[in-house]
Image (tube, rainbow, N blue to C red; front, side, top):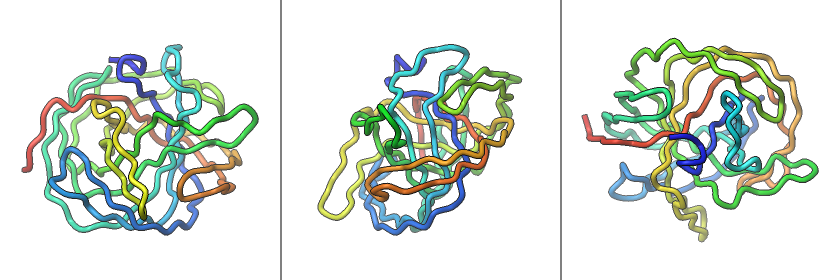
Length: 221
């Protein structure tokens, strides 16, 4: 169940200096009977595709900008998730934000055309992960990290913004975000997506690893 099989990369997630953003979107994923409205508030994190333990990238152009969002309360859900690190029984809270396909603008870069939008849920009940150390390499360099508790879960969603609708392209692949050993980055990048035509962003430190995962079952709690 690697990146190639699920057609979705691992992502190393970086804390960035917050940038204000404003948009109203309608999101509908596999948890929703109808679309849920979310107000985008600010750019919170940025994600690079990352090679785990020397495995190849699925799409070197795939980047995700993580926007924090505000929305109505949702019911807690019990979800069973599986990935290369094992099987996890988690509980999700209300939607916390939105992962938006983005281009890190630099020589030779392209906008990722096959990457979905993902609604991010903060986890309200988690379990300890096995003691795992990983070698990660992305466009900022290589490091060894310790895997920590799962913190967020992201599901692919149909996103409607204005009169534009973005369908789900890969409904099987989800992302489970684990804390990792933080490391300072101190980089400047240019980000382009549907909410930012060309925005300069200061990258501060690495904080999480998003692992491609499958959702085995779920139900409201």
